[in-house]
Image (cartoon, rainbow, N blue to C red; front, side, top):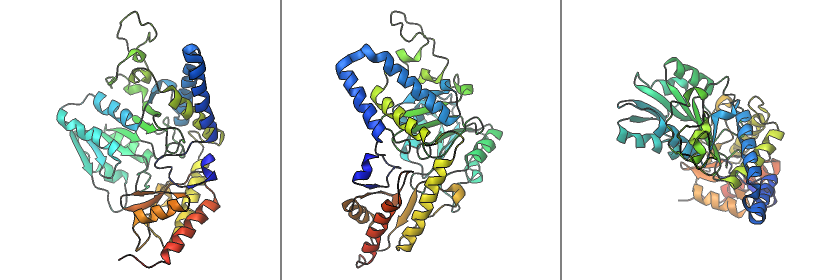
Length: 377
């Protein structure tokens, strides 16, 4: 990770730095595009399908259930706008969702859909809390696997099972979990899923994934229809609307070749490190590091904000430094070569598997020095 030469990087829940193999893949693509033009386009297309296969393996899904999309928001809109809503139908989502998993559902109100946000209970998001807001008109629950500010990881298996018993579908915003935590959609049959690749999957921005369970392919009307959506995609001389019998029907037109090339390289690296649908090696490493970080931060005088128990923990740790403005702490950390975020009025670190003891020591040292300074106000 070239970023380590300068920074202790704790901001993977925002935008991840690129690994060296990913940087090389992008540079090589640019060189090919400049020198070869479209004479190597078929090679790029094969790489795209390699990415699709990697994503399918990562999710325990079939390749024909994977669509490649620019970002999480696009994936959510494909589901939200393509779903066969009836007036009075309800969709439920947590009030503390990232805006991308709120606005597409709120936008459905103009179509007579009741989009209802529910407040986070004191004990964190449980299956009972989410299902308790549903009624017989609820068609879908939209929820993040991991909360972007709280770091709370839901019990996905319990939620999907209970929702399906009530004939309620589940959409999962997986952006804050995918790349670290294993997810086998064969055993946990989420209905729809979307995620960007630029966080925990260590990919570039503008390259993401949409999963649509095969059983729902004909349920969603394609929102973006283009040449790439149809069976005879390369026959430009004939117009015949026959959508591909796969999630590719939702991709529309030309793809972000350079972005997906980078994401494929990043996923290859993570999978070589042990990431797949069944292996929790990376998850355990991140959870252990986050737990240690929480202990060290507390010892340095920081106060953890609603730390979840291990079963609901993630790579996100929120905290405050009493007497110090979070934005000022963030600025002082940046001056010391430490990258973190401020979300929901709290400081947020989000380490990945490559972060080490030295990174944490640098952070603790800055916080300790700040605590010794006079309090604000």
